[in-house]
Length: 275
Image 1 (tube, rainbow, N blue to C red):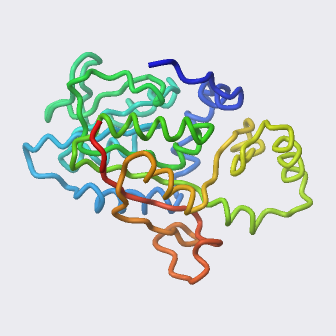
Image 2 (cartoon, rainbow, N blue to C red):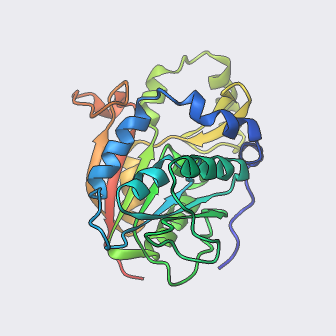
């Protein structure tokens, strides 16, 4: 298949930044979403898994490995993929602290070595053909780091091709309508985004997080619920759950205004179209 487009310069800088990886776990140590999304995954993936069923999860954009740890500690196997080598180093450290043994780079995970780490572009999935997954996850807005609607659909279709027919896809995404409701219309970042969008350098829903965590700018795509649902459907999946996150991201948003004010989304889907 043809190689996907080169990275946006902002993302390339993000992926090469050691400081972000070194401070990641400390910075988010009390972040409510990071507790709730684990609870969500436990339900979506039916964790813990029975001994011996070799339930295999693909974690795309695995970062420092918190979901890899979750899966391994609850009886599953996992392949974590990330293009940031510093994040993968932190994942190795995290897993070692929990006495979770890594599979060698050329070997599939097994109960004795339940996690495999792969440095690679998630848009290409350079994995052995015999690795077919029971679930794939894109957490903490990983999908928003993939630019253009076409590339996001291509990625989800590629993921679908590596899932079991009964597999699960789990995604977290930011809410575009909430952003539009809360951002000051005359703020400098908002006006700069308007100029970039008018010049064709940003798509609708793309935003620049200025000095992300005080280090560098980051381009990130926010979704409306309609856009996200249509993307998942068009990529060959059937929706199983769609959760609107509350303000603190500790659970579900129950208000009638959830489309506009939910603080992001979590969804679970399954494949509907064979390849």
